[in-house]
Image (cartoon, rainbow, N blue to C red):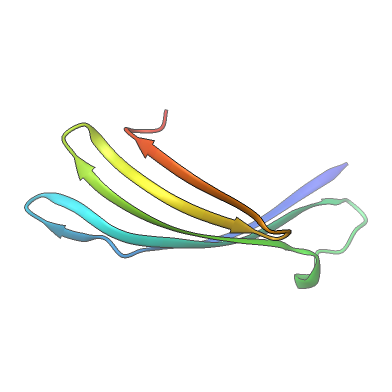
Length: 84
């Protein structure tokens, strides 16, 4: 049997003006999957981070983000609208 441990810290630095929110944000994440008899230790966690900029628009929230995880995996994301 496998268990999953995830720790996520997300920092939203959104500024609000004129009824709209916009600004930079970021996240720091760590987690892994473990067998039931494996110990959960800080050294065994896989880490990742991201930075993103978002804005509330008339078509919904718009975000562009850059993420980096262990092993040199990098991604760029673009999102429009609400996630269902």
